[in-house]
Image (cartoon, rainbow, N blue to C red; front, side, top):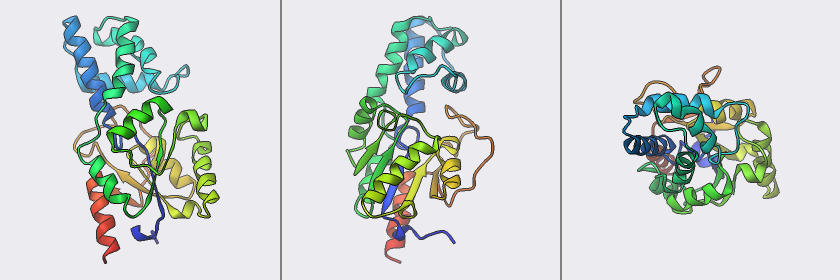
Length: 238
């Protein structure tokens, strides 16, 4: 039986795609570059090309890798394959916005749980994302801290070690994420309770996130962070 929401001590979060609208940020930047070059960019096509390029064998840490990704996809989009545009795509991550419900929902959840970020982004980018979200995190783990990226189990095991150092265990964690590939599937394999925030519920496909080999039915399923925060408050008063 799935644990009730009041039973958890920690909520761990994927950040990029769950709390921060990276797809919107990418599309905005690519469309702006297109306007400068006199090219109309289709946002969903750009996300498909991004997804294919992002998971190449020579990929670098995110979002630094956006320079390489841009140079790979620019010809397909009819955009100029110039490094400075790739650097713009990378640097624009500093201005990526949170989903409209993220900051308020996190503030509500922080009243009941310790919030822990688990992001494949580098530390420099995470600091901007955290500020955009209102700096709600009790602790943050980045690709720089772990030396790896989800869905590598090693990333999760470092978080397990952290909560164990505080006298808790992975059973005290609810892992919250939108990516079936990076988070929901592997968290299930590792015996965690998970919560899928289906950000693309009104859209087809997986957008900028790699498609999982198979779909994992989550323990909890919401289409927004606001729904999770409301459910946690309702469960606490039940």
